[in-house]
Length: 99
Image 1 (cartoon, rainbow, N blue to C red):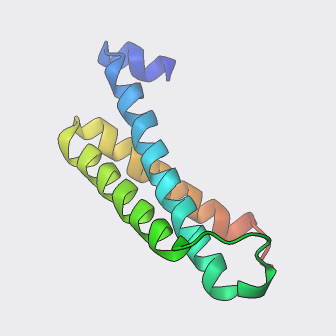
Image 2: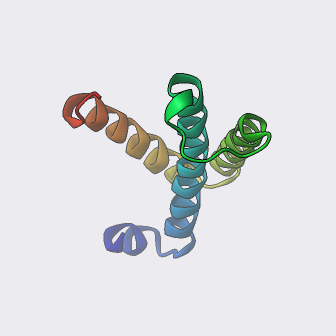
């Protein structure tokens, strides 16, 4: 981050990057909850009335926020977020054990 701030002379780009990662993180948490409801319905320790709808709305909402952030910020932000997400996907495919 220090190199990015030094090169761009801007503190806003790291803030945009953090906001982008947060929005996609919340979208993935919502997707994960939907996946677990669909694949492991008997192992849920508590239930929320309308849980699937709530998780779906959260997933869509935060995905749209992330996409809008990518479209309305400097190109450096979009490049960093996309590269970060791709690296996380590659890492998860290579290193994370399957259940």
